[in-house]
Amino acid sequence: MRKKIKILNNEKGIVLLLVIGLVSILSVMTLQFGLEMRQQYVVSAGLRNNFQLSEMAKSGITITQGLLLQDLDDNQFDSFFDSWALLSDEDLTGLFEYGTVKVQVIDESGKFPINAMVDLKKETAEKPKDEEETKNRVQHEKDVRNILWRLMRATPFLVEDGDAREIIDSLIDWIDTEDNNGEEEYGAEDSHYMSLDPPYHCKNGPIESIEELLLVQGITEELLYGTKEKPPLAPLLTVWGDDGKVNLNTAEVLLLQAMAFDIDKKAAEALITFREDEENEEQLATPGWYKTAPSFPGDIDISESLITTKSYFFTIKALAENDALTKIVAATIERDDKETAIVQWQTE
Image 1 (cartoon, rainbow, N blue to C red):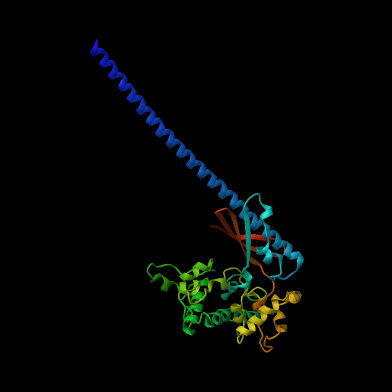
Image 2 (cartoon, rainbow, N blue to C red):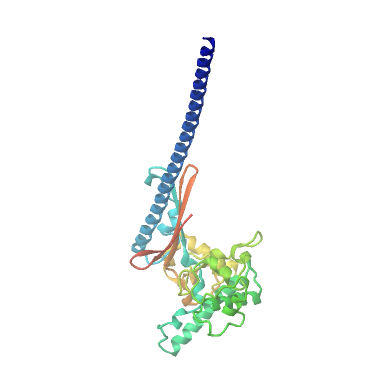
């Protein structure tokens, strides 16, 4: 009898151990399930918040497009007095259920148009009508290239003359559409780039991004993006627009200095001071306003083929924020006399 009871007690002990083990396993499984559910919730919430922030940033782009169209009805020239330029100071918080959106508009037409250094129209069906037009096109190319030469040679970039010529000639060879037209004196064609390690082909077409410039002979990362001692050249350049014209109303002081020979820092700052005065807003309608700016030398002329007061390309950067989460959307807009179109879209 005692032996039987002992066996029964052992069986109960085993059952108890099995129950405890099962409960432990179930507890671990429940805990793991809870952790997985929480992780999925966090991921889902993150995706939801990311989607909401993306839509908010996109709304900022759409709002700005509307302002750019409205601006056409307000006036036929562009300056920092326009609504699109003042948008960065506006509080857009009330437009959204949660979070904030900040918008910045950069006038690409106020920068140096790299692709205008080569008149690609001369290599297409759009041929010059006569000898005079051919002469004017050649001179315009030279005038555009001289802007970049003066920009790089001046303070704060101080690029040596030989290096500046190498960059300009290499850019010409990189952009022109034919590899057999003859290499520029200081330039480089396909044979040079294919001899590099790793090798790559000469573009022979328009530059599509500022980053692409690093592939061109002579252009260094230090020059393009700056160092501790020198500012970057990149913010003064654009790949948008091919007519070679720069908007005097929005160009930075360093670019204004490069628009013609003998424009020093003092003269360029005089133009900045003039265009920032609200009383002069209406005078900014025509490119010739620079001649009426006080302290600007009267004997300096900027070629009419190089300047404008109307802009056609804008880059819009919209930043959506909510607590510690952010989303940035950037879009480059082309605007004509009737509508706007997105020509580039980037999400960060």
